[in-house]
Amino acid sequence: MKTKLIAGLLLGGILVYLSVRGIDFQDVAKNLQGIDGGYLLPVLILMAAMQWLRSVRWGILLSPLEKVNQLSLFSVSNVGFLAIMAIPARLGELARPYLITQHSRIAMSSALGTIVVERILDVLTVLLIAVFVLVLTPTPPWMSRASGLLLFAATVATLLLVLMILWRGALEKKAEMLAGRLPEKYASGALRLLRHFIDGFQAMADRRIILYASGLSLVIWLVDVLIIYLMFLSFHYQLPVTAAFVVMIILIVGIAIPAAPGFVGNWHYFCVLALTLYGISKPDALSFAIVYHFLSLVIVVALGVASLPFNRFTLADLRRQMTQTR
Image (cartoon, rainbow, N blue to C red):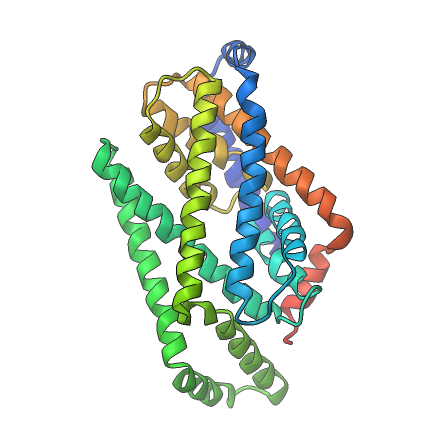
């Protein structure tokens, strides 16, 4: 875990350097002064709405295991996203599965399985949007190639989940044979971990649940596009709506890379990269990235801190839980 933290910090530092290289910060300050602040309150409201919608979707994916109170889901999600922002290398992804065990009888490994399903839905939804954008607007060849690779990876992951559900009995028998070579105290724990993890995929077997969750995924990312477009208006950019889609897609790919806390570096570099495709100067693009990143941090930190009294945890808690089976 320590190695991942150091690697994340180093990568974040490199991306920060690439983002600010050759920048005149007087230009950045001038751009910041010209923002139309009237759009920022709607942006913050929509960002908070996105957090609520994500918690609703997670509750749907958890529902085959247990129906969890929506307020509990929202508070756990808030602290979970705060942990993702605060802990390098995306190790904070483990916070939500851990915290939900404090509000339900769901095993952490099962909750982790629902996070895997959630991530696959996000990737497939964004790729669906990417196909739409690629048809409507010219994009760099590297973006088409990256979309193709992500589609391949997401398709393979989806097929693996489906096969794990369909062939669960055979998979567990094979796992039992392999576990038989381990000491008893490790074998039983590993088998329980596998069973609970596969339990987290149950939503994939329910057509109604997966359609509902997929629809919410589409709404979530369309809200994100609206946020970016309102940010364009705040910065007086004369850009088409399709540009907001492109910025979102490139930024999602960028922040998926494990790096520094708060996506510092990732967010700025890939935001600048996307905007310069549309002729926005690098100083202006960096100004946009700084404000967009700051507003995102404000929402995540405000909601996360407000929810912390109901969901306390430490890195030691995560390590301890990861070494146990339920």
